[in-house]
Image (tube, rainbow, N blue to C red; front, side, top):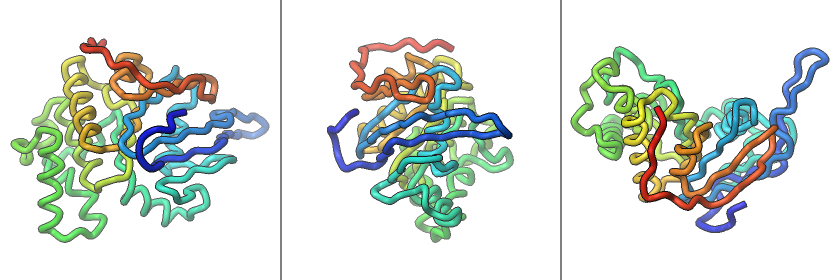
Length: 242
């Protein structure tokens, strides 16, 4: 486990997750402990069913552990009621999913603005933050474009801007390159690397070794457990499979 870097953002201690259906139980997580510090770029990889997506759901306060503790910026999450958990999701966590989840009839600006509308941010500040976030992902000139007028890679960058606009403590990305061709995936990963260099804390779930190696630290899952956690020696050039 990495102990370098800034203050702890994510602190998971001996977390388990058991799904039950009648008399059948499935151990999705089996005593997982993980610390992610401010400014880290961590990839979590493993085959389907290894527990990585289950862990991401817990980190994003979309699910609760069966046992164990999860602290986000020093606050225990599993004991919060749903209203407070929803507030944490809106204020501290930026989500990027494989499916872009953009509103099809809203342009890039409106899609990015939406979390701020829900949060009650004033219009002038909303505009400033939306334009800043779209600029961060290289889409300052595409604010009026609908999702159908954007490439897959551009749509995913809009989704990243929407995650960034709330100024989260951590960005959680679940297979963000899964629907992209190799060129768009490369552009997206370059954006994530640049954001990380500027201080963003990123946790990226992937099944792809090539994608995982773009992080600075790789955590490997198998059978609901962490089986490796080590820094990444970044290659000078990376080719991505489609």
